[in-house]
Image 1: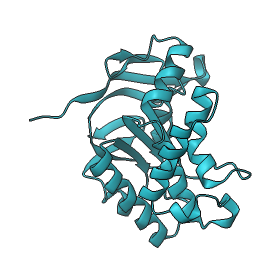
Image 2: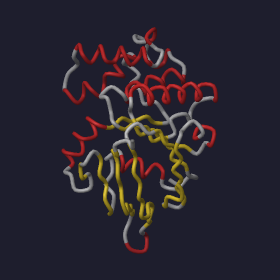
Image 3: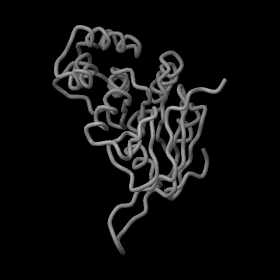
Length: 228
């Protein structure tokens, strides 16, 4: 039985600038993802990977085409609607962990949920503790980022991305700042979370080795999908 489709974009384009200086970054992108998928988004520098992730994450609007997720039209949604949708349904992991240096691992993991609710709650602390245990860092919950290794900080970032139980996690070069051993651990962790928690992952990378961890490959070249 086929899995439920969670994401669909059709004829998506993104242009920057106008007139003679206009740059067509994304060209006629058509793509869908199903619940529970784990896909690598590959392409050389300048192929449009980060722009596509930014649009899929509702942090930027496309110039044209359709963009729907969970049945919501995200092209025509208001900024308030897009922000609410993002908070409830999307998680983000970046190449650099972007943890707040003065907060503990537990507090960093809680941050997206606390910001959305306007306060911290006991339920958030419990959920953050569960996630830190899931990523193997329960013994580091009170540590600040400076007291953790690069791989540990990135695992905290993965836990933070999961705090609101996202349907889809968008990861932009999540292992690009790590050594191979740490990258292997992070990718194994992502695969385990994908299989046990059910969140879908779209992972942007230029590294074929990292892509080999993903069951699906989506390849971009000059702003067009050449394999999906």
